[in-house]
Image 1 (cartoon, rainbow, N blue to C red):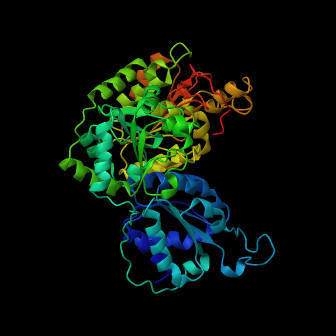
Image 2: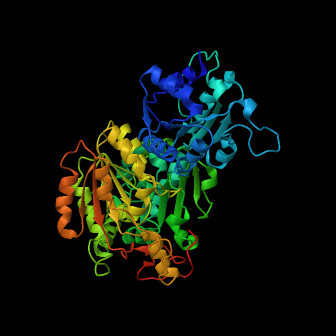
Image 3: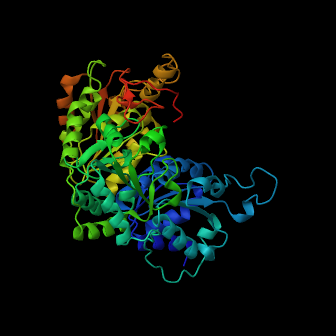
Length: 577
């Protein structure tokens, strides 16, 4: 069998339905074989970074590796940001790069490069993948692909890179039987009654327990088990940025999103709680703030994670439960079904809902801005978008307004770039998410800065007739950094307001034959949203103009406890992240 035919056959056997790429000489054999084998759609993007983000988006929906291909040299290096996005946000990815023939590789020679576009992508990708594979013999391909695929989906999911020289792609190999590969889990902590007796005992002592959940729950495929756990134990839930879709917005146990720009009442809930069960969330600085001592306080914290290094890393004194989230939740649900908690948290739940009413997100900017209130707008967008299967946010101020105010219904998901925080993520990722959902409508929410980074993928949307509804909050600046400059640089707006400007996105969309309109004030929002959804089967772009000086509030006052947030509290030290 030709090696490239094996690669295509392997992907098809694993149930891969789409691959994303931008063609180049060093991947032509693989692309040709995938096209010939049938059953896998090749989605040609307009930049390799777009291909890597689209693969990332697909992976977050399917929990199968998103697949992206790129040629050697600039093609391969352009994948790196999307590879890192997968790595930091625990999304499985299989990235295949073409490479020049071995006789054109510099090897141990003390030169920069031997072959044209020769680039050591394996070394470059090393720190941001679970493993990078350098294929040195075509006969190794079956073993390499099997190992790489299993590694991508097992334990904490993540990306792998396979670098295949062009001559090896056309070699004849003996692949043997191609087997379907299944996920292996990390389970170290014993999930017996001893553990759950201890958790139950602490819960029955607790008056104000909370669950903090993150993307690790979805990465483990444990969404249903998580919901059952929260409802069985009747414990209120707060989430990280990556977990806001784990319970519907109206669910009585869903409190809100925590962190640097979290809902004020949700951060208060963390501060007031006496027990915290952390599932699939790594307690990074954007969740806890720099003051981890106050975050921990006197509360008991059970930290459930599949990687030991994430536990007692920044927040110390946690009870370590080193296990896959799916296994933990299955065992917990079985235990608490037989051993219900003898404690009622209704007073605590009422306290939290009272805080939510007192500190409404819609009022955080009231009296502080001119024009459209983004938090109010996001509630309106949510209510108008019942047909959307998913919402994606790019990176910037709009991302935080979305996380603060999005109203997700049962089954709707929220996807964004968390650990990498990559501007330009949402538009190409929306392509992967839309295709993973069988071309059902998705909403892409972006700022004017981030949208321009991968604006070329508008053509991919048009060519593939994808119903992606794009909402651009255009504040004519890079708003999150502009707010930072107000805090620390006395309003010197270099490169955010000064020396920066966006195009008219309505005109740009129409140039791509995408329907579009603009909204300049509150009176136009209803009509704009009506046009956005006039035909759910087609893409549409809605540009919403926002005052450049609209801040994101609340914002954690850096150096203070999580409960103290701007604008009422002031940072005690300059932010480092």
